[in-house]
Image (cartoon, rainbow, N blue to C red; front, side, top):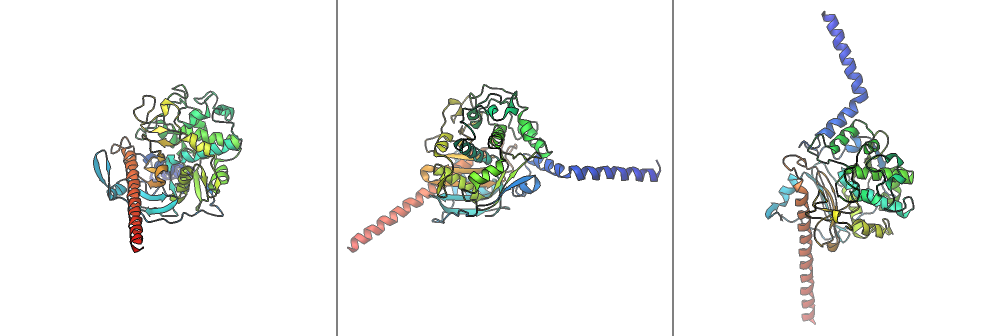
Amino acid sequence: MTLKKLAIAILGLLTIVLILWIFLGDRVTRLALVSSLFTGAEQQQNFNRMHEVFPSTKMLPSDSPYEFSLGAELSLPERFSYLGNTVDTAEFIRRTDTAAVLVLHRGELVFEDYWLSGGPEQVWLSMSVSKSFVSALIGIAIEQGYIADVNSLVTDYVPQLEGSAYDQVRIKDILQMSSGASWNEDYGDPDSDINRFGRAFALGGSMNKFATTLVREFEPGTYNRYNSTDTQVLGWLLSEATGRSLTDYMTDVLWRPMGAQDAGYWLQDLDGMEMAFGGLNVTARDYAKLGEMYRLGGAFNGRQIVPASWVKDSLTLDADHLLPGENPASDWPLGYGYQWWIPEGDAGEFMAIGVYNQFIYIAPERELVIVKLSANSAYGTPQDPEASSEFETIEFFRALGAELDIEADTEDDSLDVEAIDQSSDN
């Protein structure tokens, strides 16, 4: 081959590469990001800009944003106990790549701090914390008459799911992650369903169409298998039942009524469908509003936003396969309600959890709500194969609650001393 022909061939190849990059460049970038998620690669520079990398919709803040009043300042405990070991809190914050911790006590902001690339006005990808927002929307849609009740069949509203794992499945079973659909949510397995889903999304595939490909493994309502596509189906249900996009509906019935301070974003596919199971990008303060709303039984910002009966039902474990602890009919040691996690014990705690250590933790008996946003790159890797940091984080929250108890006892003692002094003066 002459130099001239070689030069023409190289030029032709470069032209093809350039054309492919023009048409596929964004998708290649998204695929590279998605493929890096569970490899141990650092993600703190990604989770605050996912709405810029992927197609997304925008929810505008409220015209009358709700701002939490400030309470007595709380200090984080210097250390806490986990599995019989003492954990240094500062080391834990660093190790889990914490971007934000926000604490509400009795509805007042008592602690707020940001690290990494976070900040009070910085949105953060919440991963599966999104699921609990979707659950709230289902409850509102039932109250508004768009959906009859949780015992209705999802295919009554989404006939496109006929013939799939979701054919003739109750909405309730999908809410409780008991659809019976076959699913592998092993983040460390590149061939798992969740990673196949992620790649399809990154390359522009339809999330709704993906749901139609799942097959049934269990009888619905008998086995608690965590399945992100279950929540995606709930998002599809909301869109079909209300005739509106998830973004528009949430903006009107939840986002603005709760007094959102900042804009929020939903990632979406190229068909315009939101990633219901994990694509919400919100600030810590606005995540906290959902937690406080549920602590108060669905009432917030001067109105009943989520029906109180829905909040109660969402946290009621009404079947054996939903119970926490060693459970042969569940693949996770936490209990599961309507897209909310419920741990063992009688303290009434419940939480929204997302991979990479995202949390909205609610402890009603302590009048406590905690938001933790993170980029824990060890999640799903050999360094943290069973996501033990999630259970460690729960113990951190409990220690923080105990710190509030100690401070409350100290305040009570101070009041007693004042009362004694006043009595002596008299």
